[in-house]
Image 1 (cartoon, rainbow, N blue to C red):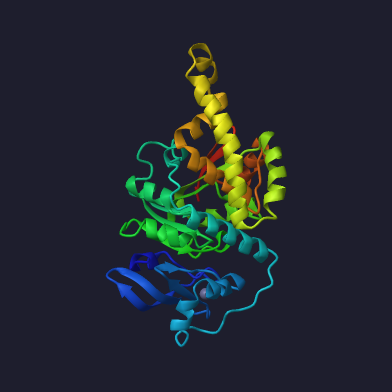
Image 2: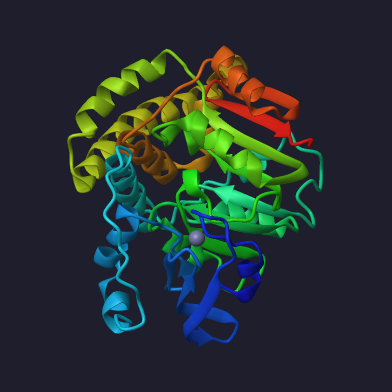
Length: 353
Ligand SMILES: [Zn+2]
């Protein structure tokens, strides 16, 4: 992390300012250290990323990064509180699945960021400070920075290590490990907040969505992609009831087989039909947008997306009236709700105080 991030960070529990202590710095990058709050909470900075977790999730850090805790055990506090939280188990599982996904499939290069921001006016991101919720390997934040935005990206899992590596040297991208329900920032801080295909994996997606709103500045915009309900997704739930019992490695095998059928047969068949004189025009329509997209992205993207579908511990799908309620409850202005193909909803709203 760089010192600039400290301007926006706050204790996720009491919102007070944090005191930085540096153990290791390389040029502008603070690689190891701690952030201390007056309320007694201490948050470690490990491998360049502040880990703004508390309770059991914070305890997990010791298992994932034992060397850090061994090296600095004299400087670290002993307040690793034990916490009984019904959501902890879900969160741990989510960390395990997505952490695995983003560290094993770091070559995922499906560039859907431009499709995601398509409904926004041109240069919307330029010169603004934004927050990326559920950043995964940090590619979208990288893309947003190319369009002139400065972005703080947040993820609950160790994907943050990949996000940090993928954006190293990019002064417009900052990475923080945190829980979406307890964000470690000053309220009213960001000019935009986005989340691309993440919130439907939370145990309480709408609560996650509403929790973002206080962090918007006045006139700030919140826009997200959320899974839309489609009948074929019911069939997917049957597959998921099997995959959820498997190890990460076996889910990977299952994802490969699913994609052999999906991509190997359907996408290739679509590709072939498109090349036929009469049939080509007929199939080359938006009804087949999913096949069209995968034809462009290639086999590996399809495979990784299958892993994503099969591995996420929780997946929710939404009908239009359900997402409309989210927007009504949010109190946001100038709201928009658009379908993206038959797979997604695009939700937009601005905070007018
Ligand atoms: Zn505090």
